[in-house]
Length: 194
Image (cartoon, rainbow, N blue to C red; front, side, top):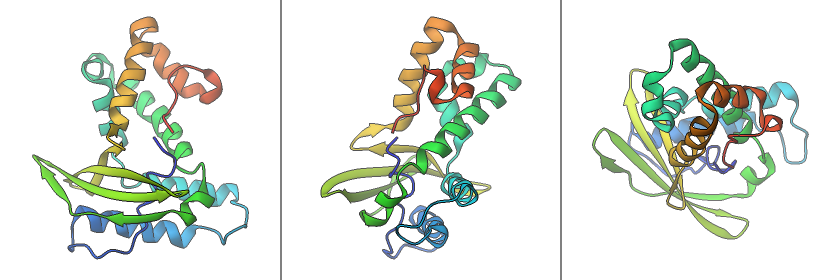
């Protein structure tokens, strides 16, 4: 996943009250309020707070379940918890990779698109002069609107994870995938897309 894709929910376009777009905009306002002034370092406590805010709207368990497909059903609940915990740590780290870029990126929201139980919130970003299409596939549940997939220039983040996870599982098994994610980037194997 692009490290910019999640945080760049930062446009001020009006949205319908209670809509998926409004949920993204509210989270963006919270994130903006926590960003240090340009040029100021991001301290570990600020980074931790940003990571938490950026993933607050993301259904990480839902993303992992979708990425694992039928493998999810074969896992024990303990394995699922470990997998989601390792994935969350990796995902949080990926979302705060380039804070300076977040400030300089332009973003425009487009009209929402409904597809079954999902609502897609398409956006167009201009990142370093290059237009990039990012859509957020969201579903409303008891906790409000949650992101279940992020599609960057037509490429699904969940599909990328599914492909990566499947290769590791086929070669070494689910437990090896969990161990690699728990080790982090230095552990090799299934890496978070950026």
